[in-house]
Image (cartoon, rainbow, N blue to C red):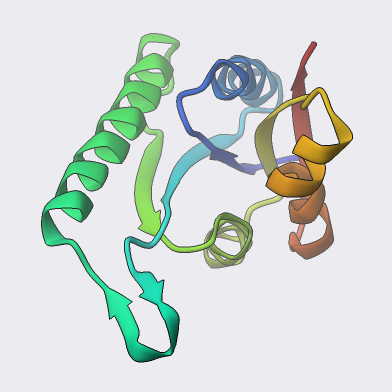
Length: 146
């Protein structure tokens, strides 16, 4: 059974539903829960000349992701998971979630998923949950919003 669950949490409606289901699963299996919030890199590349880095933008984004993570941890504490831990990491979501799952020896990754309406939107945006299944070192539970 699952002993260590990693929840990729972004604070969205799908993320909140994933948190609720993760919490219920962890209660049932007496698992530890760890949250991860993945902040995209703030480096923007401008042609072959190099990149642009905005320190103020990164600070604002970091504060936003810290608040999202704190909200998730608070929700878990209210539900009786006072020992839940969390971390904000920076990078590409698939790589960072899989890397963190390996780091903590996760048995399960839980991620929220919202269906995207059009084929073009799915192609353009891609799907973190679908790609994560290919790269994860353990099982992945995709909690779907209708």
